[in-house]
Image 1 (cartoon, helix red, strand yellow):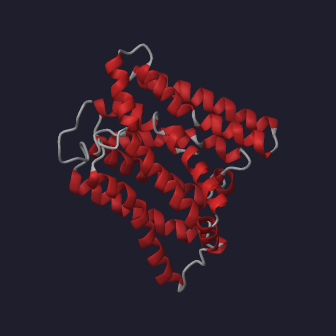
Image 2 (tube, helix red, strand yellow):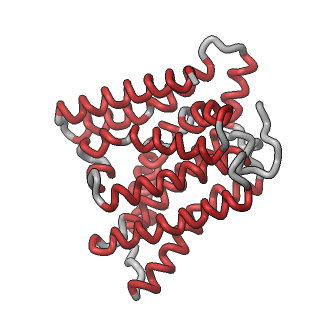
Length: 274
């Protein structure tokens, strides 16, 4: 567990130092955004360094294969990765329609998807602001260490806790989705529960896709993408309800995953070590 402590100290230390400087300096939007992004990349930077520094060529090759290879994922799990959050939100929107009586207008979603410039900018933000910045570390490095000692379920919950706490400074940095959510609000606690559920779901994907870091990046990207699009169109007075429905459905899905795949590995086949 020494390696995990090293990763956490480096990741928290650099990310928090950068984000706290953003709070203290109170910079304009562009410099502030650069600091937010730089801090966000620390998990992947530290995960890549610790996974490859002073390691032999075979270890380095295997690590980067997990980052870039689609073959590790397989067709079945690629489809699950693509569809998981879409199905989650589809059911959530259906429940929203039944309870509220009407669907959101999806004005922001339509404008973003139909404007090439807005779509490119939005996509770049979603790719950089989480998937690439984090997954080489959280899933690609830390999760493996945790699963060497504990079950997949327990490892997911522990990693989920570290993942959640790492975000805390962002709740006080301007121009972040976290500061819009507010620290300690109902939306905050729904986000906490939802992040634990997402951490478990991502372990399930990771373990069943031959420990594919690329798979973790893609599912993280799709989650951010769909959440940001649909979430932006939920009316303010229905925001808590919409997030509550989505979170409850997420919990139901991960409970079903644990029941059908088992809490020890969340898989039905032996995992590969490569």
